[in-house]
Image 1 (cartoon, rainbow, N blue to C red):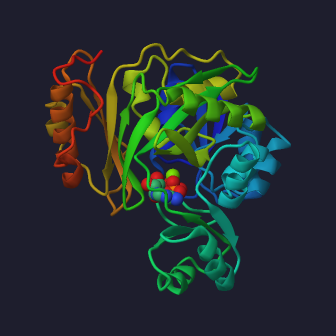
Image 2: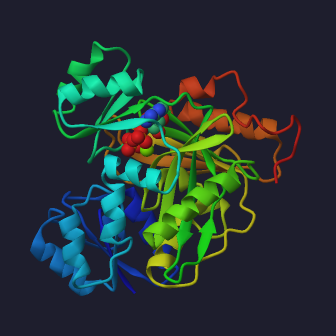
Length: 383
Ligand SMILES: Nc1ncnc2c1ncn2[C@@H]1O[C@H](COP(=O)(O)OP(=O)(O)O)[C@@H](O)[C@H]1O
Ligand SMILES: [Mg+2]
């Protein structure tokens, strides 16, 4: 099958790598001159809303998908006239606008932080009386990796944050004092069948994901599955979906969802029988979903801005480097390292993970005094 992808970054790259074993071919529409996915298929170099490029992609592809939410709805609608597009434009319409998304969670009874729409500085001033500070001001669209948002600590921050975000339509939401930040990834096929991956616990710094650890047998898995299930069914979603969650006491609050493969699911390549990338392709192509079957304990550390020496990573048992072939640039995701931990002790896993964090330059996480794999018993062998 021919798969068209809007985007040519690392998510497109890993989808194309997964698609090789399914006998699929790929074409990427991406405005960058040398996107990292281009090594795995044909590259159409044009803006995402270029009509003739969209038509060319639709004419070649049997199905089209995308690697990020900041695609225009009109581009997807144009594609949909010619070729099946999954997830559909109606799913993207909810995911790409933080206000519509939060309101949608509300209609499904899914708890979120308190929020309010903001169109003017006066709206913002009155909203924070209700929401209370600290809070986040976020642009409704185009945000990612912590971009397009500002933390409001005190009343004096309002004017500056409003200017900084370009006075564009925003949402203000209260800062959640979460115990853990989690995500759940699931896939839904064309006949409505679903698979759910174990939840990941995620650590961010400066709004960018740094570390994900899968939490096998976590007591909150059932709650996470039930939220993402209701969302996928309501939206008639087809493909992989990732839902970001905040844990407060033992309750989950939805932060945002992504109708695509997700950074916190990269560990599924090494540690699950079927990766998120393969299951996304299976779902959008109408193939049976792949089983997940007792995944291994695993963690993933992002490589941001610069790549370490590959040999140093290979020296750590259970570690696999993924370098995306992107130019090093501050705050840019240029690779990741996965650590799997079957049959090692909790202490060994913790030590190896800290070594990887040091290699990745995440010194604060590497040195944190609490065990990273905290909910396991000392001496326990991971399985
Ligand atoms: N309301 C909130 N309360 C606490 N932390 C938040 C809140 N909103 C965002 N954050 C932090 O900032 C990170 C990035 O924000 P998010 O809304 O997920 O945007 P994006 O991932 O699109 O950049 C989150 O993963 C979380 O760590
Ligand atoms: Mg996020």
